[in-house]
Image (cartoon, rainbow, N blue to C red; front, side, top):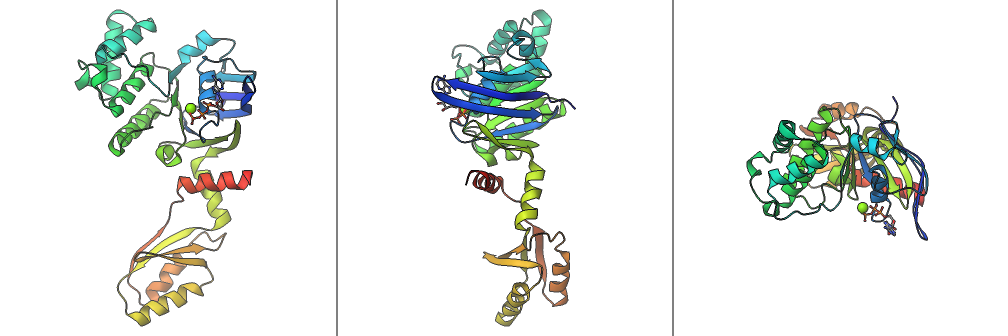
Length: 317
Ligand SMILES: Nc1ncnc2c1ncn2[C@@H]1O[C@H](COP(=O)(O)OP(=O)(O)OP(=O)(O)O)[C@@H](O)[C@H]1O
Ligand SMILES: [Mg+2]
């Protein structure tokens, strides 16, 4: 499948500052792509080029096969861009604000009303339609920003740090909104410098550092790859035992051929399995056979922060 978002050898310099160095990105249709990188990595620069707001110094960028530098008007119909700072139109009401932008997209008459209504409902702002924009909370303002870029029903959404500053509840709501947009078939790029903030929403990630892509691929693949290299981690908990039982348990696990390492975590034990061990269940069977009451036995997810640190460490150092 040809990519919905693509850059080839993209370069951008601001005077002496090289913001992007030969960036190749390819995001297939329907993906939620997490564009991750520290401050100054070049995320906003890439997004602004894709959004036709900045001409690259070199290379190409396209959306659904449309070259954004050569055919910006056509590209703008495909994309919805949410900047990292949304301009505030303080005196407008929420519905007026959306209507204003719909007009800018040349959507008129009854269709404009419908489009505004749809966007308000989708982003759960219908109850706030007569409120002034300035009265919205941070999470609501972000949703309004998203409502605004949905008005012309773009295939591609470019969201620059949309989850920044959201409280946990607003983040959950935002995550649901992204899932809904994904179900509608949109291709979504979300930038952030905090992996865990967007990790759960994304199907794939690209990690950018100093204008270069360190890694790009499916999130599950990254996790799987790390598991293969470093060994899976299993969390176990057994019912109360006496001192002797505890000693037997530790001896059994420490000497076990599947286990590479062992660490306490509160009442739990975290076991790192030897690299290449795929199935930890014989271990569970053995514990039960030895008479331990197994209360918990599960494989740990590798946190995205860990993924990020390992990737950057692996390639940079
Ligand atoms: N208009 C500009 N003029 C000069 N330098 C710029 C300009 N825009 C960006 N830069 C530089 O380009 C580099 C990349 O900046 P960019 O804003 O793309 O990073 P970012 O990944 O979005 O960072 P952040 O996480 O802080 O938003 C930085 O070194 C920045 O200083
Ligand atoms: Mg930025």
